[in-house]
Length: 538
Image (cartoon, rainbow, N blue to C red; front, top):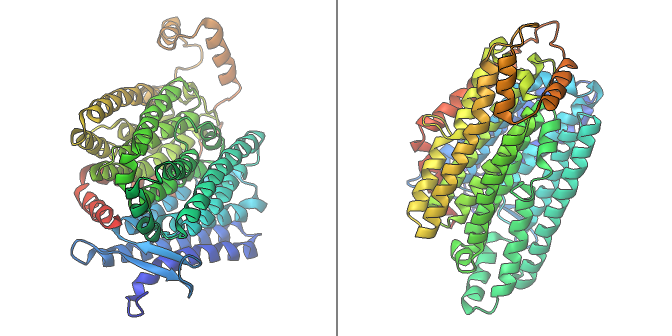
């Protein structure tokens, strides 16, 4: 490490340590949940500002620059090392922004869903979660990556379980089992790789692997290692068919937890995977061993199955969760294209999804409160008229997920198409067909919900038989199923008092909507930063 390096180069290490320290300090205010929240929010703001300053410093050099940072006085393989470039600094900055807005957007639900004596634990886990995400973004060695994967798992399970209901306990146990399976497979891959190379740093591993790969003698062990590590990341990021834990975990947890799990936690593993592809295995190895073909297949399968599951879902938060399965499939498809533009599309989709899904979850949470805490999509009829900002936010998020121009989700689909065109004819055909089908499926489950929340609810006694029949025809449900729905809705009467829309929710939704349009319209600066960051990864 250069002792004359700029002071700002310490910021990644400071960010990780600061969030860990905040987690250690929080138990001292266990009886003051609001103080714990303020500590958490202050740390997020400070860490976000530090990473924004670092990003500006790295971009001040022509074409951007990157550097490595040795933690402590011990070099690899025993010491830990961080690496920062434009890609990492941008992701860290925007992740802090998304986490802050996700907490603000669901703050009312946090205080309603979490028992007062457990509030400090919730914000403690948020600190640890942010620390693990920053470590996954900045790490340059496999040991650090594995340690913070485990911290991430524990913290993520905790923010699901803290709602403390039977449903969340079951969802957390399922989440934990699947997550530990993914961690175990990843660790097996790390052990075999260390046995082959004697190294833990990404760059050092690559220096050993490239000559071994060229001899052709280690094709099978290399394929096994790649398979184990990528499979572990795939399970933890909930790509199909390893998604079974996700709808329950995201659908049953408090609003902010759902937003952070979908918007950020899944993305941390994907960024780690992209770094492994470039800095450890190289795209050439993945292509020669046909690993990228497998990644592409998993991605496209996730896009289709996730959307089909969402199409059948009647629970609003579970529908959004299944949509996340489809969106993670997009990222895997981009990685599977095996080109820089495919990775660029994947990275931009990570950002678009990170800003869109928290907005959808927070808006849905607000609409649910106006429906008497009924999560059934049918019960949300007319709720956008009671909470217009939540309705607008949900509509904007829906249009973004569909991929309508001017919204964030359109840009990555444009780059996915470009990447497919620059690839071989097979990938071109498969990717373009998958994009078309997936876009149609996205529209089929998001647009009806948007229409439903903006449609005035009929008063009691005005239930028209024509509308009843139309509902049967549209959804294919018989009279018996519809009667069950009516009975279920009757159990959830509308609140006598209109739920209060907090200032924090308004701030969160306005900023998330603005960011969504910014990502969809002013995308060139971000793509330039991502391109510079990707070029420096190799």
